[in-house]
Image (cartoon, rainbow, N blue to C red; front, side, top):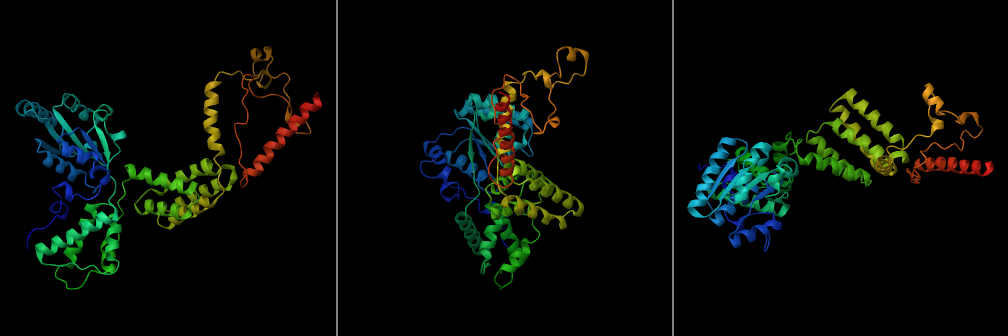
Length: 433
């Protein structure tokens, strides 16, 4: 039988018109099409998830522009290879008057020092750099290099693009082998959903289906595909951007009181192999940032769930995360403490040297005592009202109401308590006059 694998390479498009997805870059009057039509190219960083066409589009650009080019991967190449190519780039420019297009796959694997080697050659125009990365360039690419390149973001492929790729692959297999893979019922949707916007992931699954079902006249059923992908962990990079995007999406869903969305992101992380304690730590933060005193019990629930999870471990303890997620999402919300924190950082920065009122300083030594420390200090418990009109704020700080409670849940009670003390102090001041 003819070698038709790997499908991801065999079906890789060679022309822009055959490229699927990323219309915001390749569509009419968009940047990539403009580069190709004008026969002009500048240094670019392609950033996006795996299987979205970064490498393919880089190769198409080079071919369409008919540019001298060198391709290598940052995972297997080092500084010696870079220096050799830089020398070659200088010679190419002298001979042909063209810049060498240097395509570096997975450029984030180079450390900052290695990336520095590109700088002078990019600046002089000896090379045009085309780099691909699945990591956020803001964190993984040298800033000096970033300032000399343009970042183009790639997005996961839509269902329509994935379906076209799947159909092309099925036609290709039939045309090359004479074997027809027939997908029944909801099988196509299962395959598309499993791919998670990643064309390579889709094609790799189709290869497995082909190898398992080749020679069988039976159609491929939903149960068969589910069995193939069972126990396969969803694509999830615990060290990359996706981790932070998912935990952020989870946090925002809880904040927005959307139970369904919160559970979806929670289980997407859990099924991807995320550390449950990482998620619990974020949920503990949520209790104070987005709930606060509107439901003080939220923190207790979180800490109890953490203790229960550590006691049971996975998978028995995993359900406690759903328990907490539902509780936090349905709880009344308040960001009063979060706003207070931001406000207090500014206040403290402005008044970081403000003098503590002398009457609330402990006369712990004779020097402090001589200055009057502790004199005219009023012990609140000595008074029937359990408060006094004694000023405890530094004199130069005139701002007040740093914490402004909302009127939801238990925080309404906190507001009533604060208002009670304020009114009582005002009454005491009036009576003194």
